[in-house]
Image 1 (cartoon, helix red, strand yellow):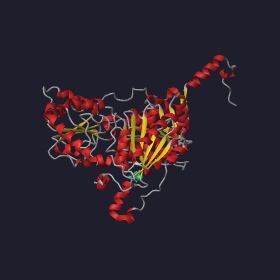
Image 2 (cartoon, rainbow, N blue to C red):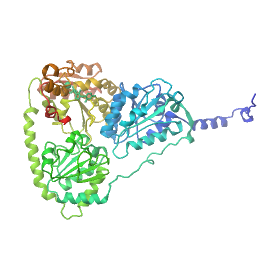
Image 3 (tube, rainbow, N blue to C red):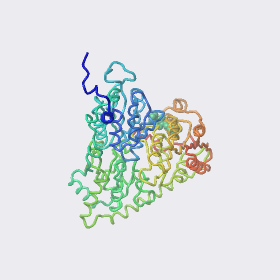
Image 4 (tube, rainbow, N blue to C red):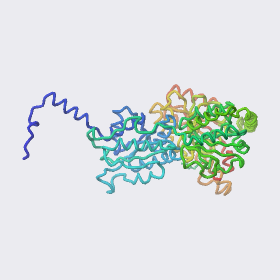
Length: 583
Ligand SMILES: Cc1ncc(C[n+]2csc(CCOP(=O)(O)OP(=O)(O)O)c2C)c(N)n1
Ligand SMILES: [Mg+2]
């Protein structure tokens, strides 16, 4: 028998107990290391759906005051983490269990990937001791996540948990942002280790603080081009808002007097009516411009791959990602850097010239403003239509009339949402959210949940197609449960109508109506089931009042409302009729 060490034979004193306690306090669990690293990243909320592999993370979050928002479907958790990132400008975090929890979240991660949104996906995994043995819910998560993330790895030891979270987070912000995936096996997470064995990066001390402007010579070149230009046009893309470069961008267009167009998350950087805000005349401007400046948005399908820009214009591209610059079409000049920092540097460089050329551009702005007005007037009969069934353009118009500068507007659907982009003009930066280039239906519920949690005093309105609503709506219950109610408006045409158009056009009535029609669902009852206000709308003139009742009910009851608007399934957006998205 081994002899008992003498010190263990001593009776326990109060001092011993204290010493033991302080030794215990110097022990940390894997779950607490996750929470400490998230805290250092500024994450105050995780979006999750529980599973036995990840319970220790919740334990760590509870002690670190990180809110645990548990949803009903992991896709919503991932979209909510993305929405949180878009609304805060910080890292969003989704935590899922192994296997199906992970796969359910993938659409949200893929959306964040195509939208350049910094989302950290932390996933559970079977224990390292059971590696490749067929453990419960085992899948090769790291390999699956690789092509749709900027960084995908597994943590092999408890000591490295916090370190690897900071590594994954750093990668989320490398160049243009995007998602990372980090797998933590169950035994790695479950262990407790001495605190001094863990590397816990200090907040603010493990990333660059630089906002890159690239090559100063290129800044001078662009300034010279701008000063000379008589017909410039700038497109401010999602990166401008996402990187919070909007104030510099606004100053840039105002001081240089340049017509500005906006896409994705940058819609709303300038309010409608601002003399530099343009949106209906982009292709006219790009046709006639002598200088086109593309900031923070790729030449992808939304830009016709860059093919539809005027032939004589100099095309300059500024992006956070060197891979985007000059992709799909030739450019005259390409700059890589932080959109706000670059635009500020360029504006500063123009002040070297005694005349920055603004005066010579007045007539160009006037010409485009006139054209904007003509194009708006052309749409007015549709916007004001009181047709029955309701014309989807009328819904779009009413939505624009309804929103305020404090309404975060989210579009989640096919054709009805495409149409709404022609009428809805967000009044404030960051108040427009769309799925981005992945085009995933179902983003709206997660975006709405996150937006309301981040901005409790704002109104959140999501406009859905009936197809989209059916995909993720059950998490309206989560929004209600967490005191994050929102207004859901549905443009209900009982169909996946955007797809139906192309099918009808190609195959005619008989085959065109197969695989794309849905039942007539009175979705207002869904809101009622969850304790909120619901209304069916069948008359155009009733839309405004119904929206108002929804607003009042959400504010007074704290429950989400559903306004189910029956729209004409025989009307489509011009882009859908043209099938522009496939060209
Ligand atoms: C997750 C997902 N599945 C399928 C599609 C293909 N898709 C694009 S639009 C559309 C129809 C959407 O229907 P709805 O939300 O009712 O809008 P509508 O076109 O009817 O206005 C579909 C199925 C997609 N973009 N995303
Ligand atoms: Mg539909």
